[in-house]
Every structure is written in C-alpha cells, then in structure tokens.
Image (cartoon, rainbow, N blue to C red; front, side, top):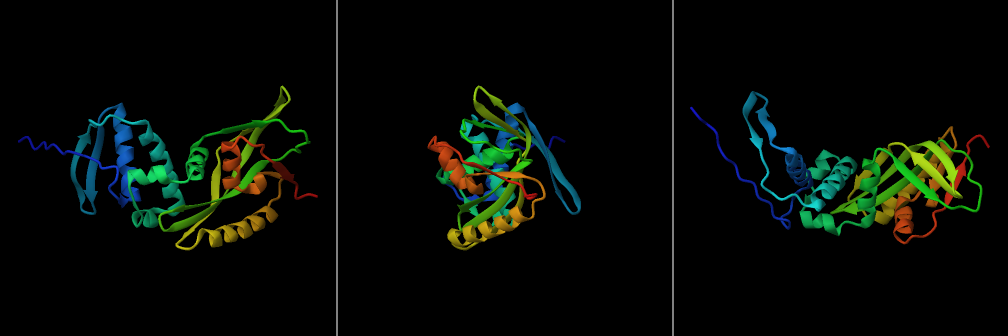
Length: 229
C-alpha cells in the first residue's frame, strides 16, 4: 500500500519562533539546494516514519548568511536558551553588525589579516580577545583565541595568517550588557595572566572595537605580550 504523504512548508519572515527552530529551518532549506534531503522521525521507542524533503523555495543569499549567524548564536547561548529565545527572520537583519562579523570570523577555517605598521611587531603564538553582544533578552560574552600559522612582510605590509578561531569561555545572562562587559573584561585579564606563550591583541582584545575599526577603515592597533618578560 502506498503510504506516501506530501507535506507543505511555508515561512513568514516576521513570525517569531524559537531561535533553534529558525536555524533548523534555514539548514533544511540550504541543504535542499543540493537535492532532496532525507530524514527520519524517531522517538524513544524507535523510528516513527521517514521521508525526503525537496525545497520549492528560491534560495536567497540571506538564508546562507543567517544560517551561519544562527549557528554562532546557538553556540554562544546553548540549546536551552536558544529554545527560550523567540526570533524571526527579520530579527536577524536587526542584529548588531558586530555579531554578523563575529559569526563570519568564528565560522572561517582560517583568517588573513594584513596592514601597514610603522612600529615593530614582535613574534607571537596566537591572538586572543573578548566579545560581547545582545540577542533578545540575553546579554552574552565570550573569550576567544586563534593560532598564528604564518606571517611575513610583503610590499611593506605585515601579513598574518591565522588558523581556526576558537571560543574558550562564554556566558549568557538576562542582565544589562554593561555589567556583563565589565565581567568579561575582568575574566579576560585573568586569561591573559594565565598565558605561557607570547600573544597578540587587536584593539586591546575588544572584538567590538576591532569590528568598528574595520567597518570605518581605521588603523588596527596590535599589541604583543610575552609572559617570559
């Protein structure tokens, strides 16, 4: 007996749903651009049914970008808080540019940074920094690091190649962001003091300040600290 059923999907860019659900829906749409997506629905007793999903949606460029941002927010907030956060697709557009910048940074496999400097930049093993933001009722903060893979001076420009950025500490609370920003700065100072290898900071480690400087095409200040001295 043919038990095949058709299920229709639709989306409303202004409808608010749990953030984790919106990200899942974006994943489904983006995966389906390569063809049908097979799925199974299971419970603790076993598989209930299986099927395939073929998207009739015309994929928009924002869907890929927002999926990347959504995964970043899920990583920062965690599943429980993401489930409790109501979010629409329009809300993604309202996010601070720094969050979108951070999402692209942390999803990249490698980062290249280059610029002209009239002062000497000592050798260092990694770059470290901190990051704050707000999503819905949640203020969040994170401390991150990324290893230096290679560096050179090319045509009077310093070129730095970094590996995969990694978040090594994060918090999210329903509290004023200024309070959490103060807490993460204190935590960042403790993290700097725990280093055993030389490290660099951009804009004193503040990713928000770094993003603003890049958006405004201003110079980026690099400081290198060596715990051995």
